[in-house]
Image (cartoon, rainbow, N blue to C red):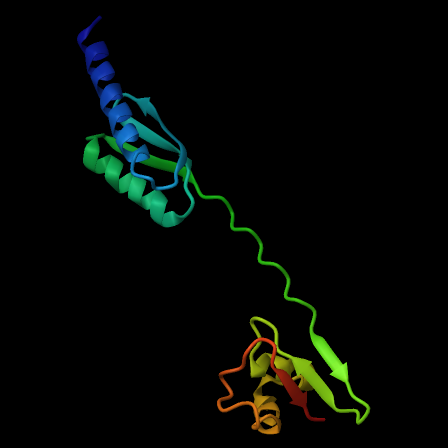
Length: 148
């Protein structure tokens, strides 16, 4: 075994020990491992978010003196947000429109749907002054009168 082989084995052990320590920190990184080429290290795995990915890199560089470290830890694409629930609209006998507020609604968005102009939100607010005190505060489940 030559000098370089002893150096490489020692460096590999240093990398393995650092990875074991980082794995034990509960950062949520799955499959954390490294590819080592002399003193160049490529970190591999899957992190739950960018913060965890950056933290692993920072910790690794504090624990191991490399010539270069590449962070090849992947972050899964976020799950697509579910489509909003269908808009609940009721027509009464008087041709009065009632809209039930769903999660994510704003008066501007409701005005855009009914009038084609988000700026018409005050029309809805004024028609519902009996249940609304502030045009920026509507609650899921509220039934709003939508004037013509």
